[in-house]
Image (cartoon, rainbow over all chains, first blue to last red; front, side, top):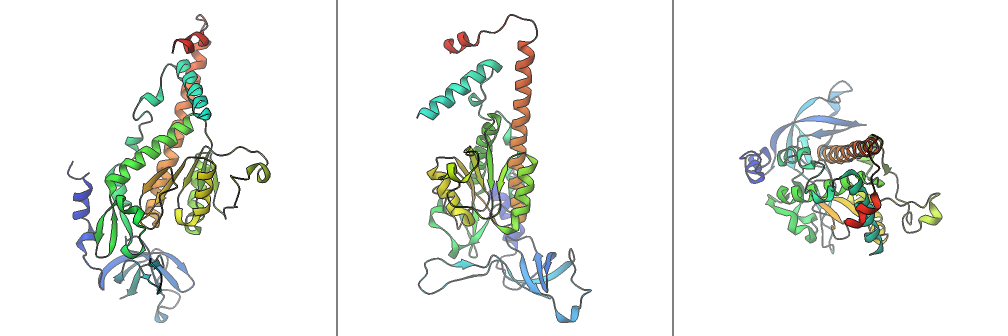
Length: 97
Length: 242
């Protein structure tokens, strides 16, 4: 009963536990590789997108690899002057460590 | 009004033949067993957008915000998802045509696979305007779907408007940035993650397949009963009695 309660699950989830994303270190998996862009799934709503570092060459950062990232923000949103609503890029703001 | 009467008449005739009334049960197809709030939570259904992106019409489904991220109330989602799965099952049970619509490139393949799994229809490329409202010109067979399931609402607003105009019931996954007004059965939930989309697709396909199996069993049962040498059943009298 306690487990199936939404409020309880939310309170004890990692999403709440991590607090503000502000450059926290998290682990994720590379889900897609498009050109030099790596799409990293760290369990949030959106994937984070980073460029493959130039020193990695072609061998590093393959599909399915586990990577440690710094999570700056879970969603990139912005606001144009005169608009009432923000718009979203549908990706998280991360960088590789 | 006329169509409602026809539906009721159609339905009552079936129920008398098979001797049960699926609509009298609250959960005839056991859709409650298909998921739990925990499974929704594990798939990240509660994760909403940033607060700045929200549509105020979604306020009733939002639990609160955490450092600028909206959290969707899974108790509300649970209630609506149950209703939507129940409706889907009933329509599939009565041999309705179900259409999956998702024009978001990320999930096209998943939706196509789901629709093919449960032998229903899908639109995953661009929605051609007027395909419901101008069907007699655009479609070779003017048979409209009986239920439309929208898996990415912001990408398909024109399709939603059209289904409302054509009076076709719709189910939609609405995130915190969507407008739920024109959707008959909105389900508040995350529509951006693959994990949650996979969950919705699995639930809908299972619900449809279960209902079809149930229908098959009931049809077979009726045929067996009428062919077992007993006195033929007088359906017309039974209908009058009801």
